[in-house]
Length: 353
Image (cartoon, rainbow, N blue to C red; front, side):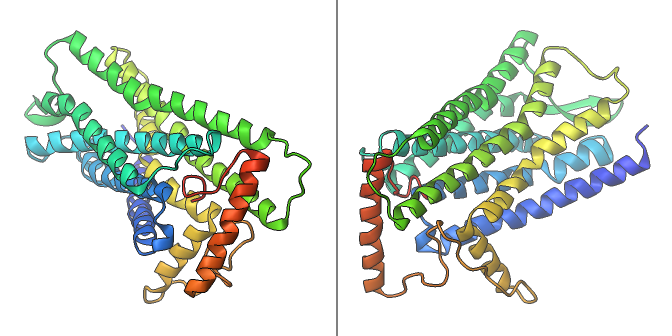
């Protein structure tokens, strides 16, 4: 028997995830799509990740949660059982491999700064490839998922042709969802950190603008590293639990099993909330965009914080006329050339968010 206080806590926690994820990821999409200054390659990937998180929110909350916890059976049709399972796998793969795309794109821009930067058309092709691959990987699980009847009650579960196929499929999904993305993210972020923080500039003097640009790059790297850490911390425990269950290691005999399962499941689902919060806390441009969007809502927030030094973000002094834009572009190009000479870095859209 599950205590009333635990049920109440679970209701509140899943409701909070649903609301925060819809609002936060919706704001991310709105801020990027409504501003041409925000439509860089990196931000295109960030929007794609936000769409994947919205996909996850709709397919994992509230219907699967209501079926597994509130009702403890599946009350909907079989095709909906298949659809929600399919959508969850696609959403997780999209989030994971969008993070990989961001890391590889940033790795390429910093390690090989003189190579041609990624174009928006190429980024669109990468995003389409991520979604196509995710759908193809999830199709076997779509076909294997169906309603299972026990004691006149239906449950949404998977049925494979053999035990070997079930274990192989779940192990393959674990490798694709966790092992490969985690390995790539670990390698690229560690390598980027070593390059950025261990580079000793030559004796050439730096002006304040160069220092500001280098700080902006480091801030962006810290923000994306936080996004990666949040993804790993949220999804790894739940994925390990699913692999243990796939290989017959059951926790049903453990009295605390319901609490552990819901804790890991909620932690994984709550990942959909954290990226917008990270952008808000660590990027002034997103923060200004969020507050501006909320200010337009009746009774919303009424103040947009001023721009911080080093971000190169909208705020007081941001160029409004074409001549001011051209002057700013010339200065950024000059700073970029200095960064290449001194740090082996550059500041295109692949590096700056």
